[in-house]
Length: 119
Image (cartoon, rainbow, N blue to C red):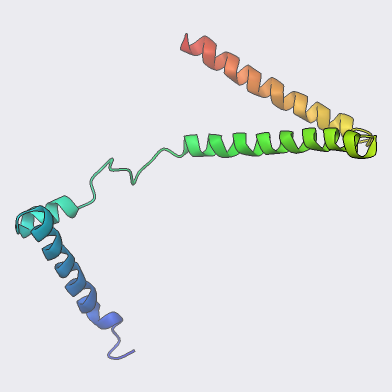
């Protein structure tokens, strides 16, 4: 580090930003640099601040569907390939079914509450 400064006091970054502003102004603002700077500012609600609830819901539903598909595949493929179910004959399978049943009750209860409050 020379002279206790990092990146030369930002001169290179400032030059690149000025070059980009000038290029933007020529292409989109008929050479007006002030208008270009105003258009390049981040605006509220331009997609940078998004609601992540739909992504979380999709992620969770995807995980549940993949796990359900895996259990169904294991039960069916075990019967077809070996003549017996590989997961259905385990002693812990009733616990898995109980957890799945509680999960379904929770989801159906949530959908019921949503529908009754919505309509």
